[in-house]
Image 1 (cartoon, rainbow, N blue to C red):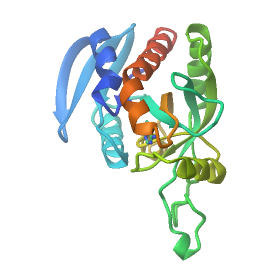
Image 2: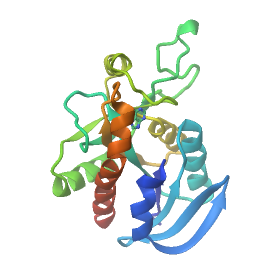
Image 3: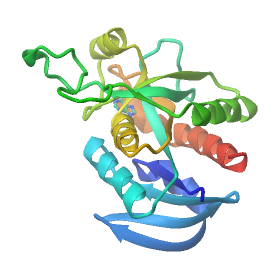
Image 4: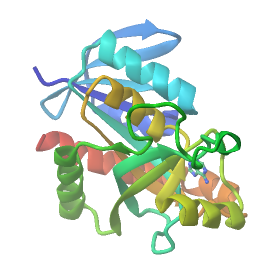
Length: 232
Ligand code: ADE
């Protein structure tokens, strides 16, 4: 049957969802608490992965193997790379890649995972992307962009790096988990989508903006996830 793995990296990103969850049980694995139940009539397993690609990958693999989720939805906040995006706007992943993968010294293009049979650009499930986009259009008045999400184990906080990431990989936004979720889901052929609300512009003001707008951006993500779950 249908069972949706719902992941956020930080407490702010899943707190509101947890309050909407009709909880059946909780289980702990690898130090992560998994909340099992229903939201808006959908069967879900909700969890907080923690920050970064390793945490995101471990959490995703556990959702697939131990909880046998059929779909994965990652929700949270990100820094904007596309100049048309402002704080509170939404990005829906058409694809995701790891911007900090770098084996250029061996002759591989920047961002490419060496000796990997799959593409290093992981495609989100087109049905889930459309569900997210249509849900967002129905319920949010902000800008909604379908685009590539870049992930790396770095909080990006300077304009030059942000500009370089945009130029090299045409990323709409940058965060620290999505592409790890995307890779793990792809390896097990589980459909996924990542939705991110913009909290900052990945520039010199990023840390201040992040602190100020985490709550607001998390709320945007939350509203969209709830709308998606009601028409899943
Ligand atoms: N998440 C939110 N803003 C971010 C940034 N500027 N860099 C990485 N992850 C982020």
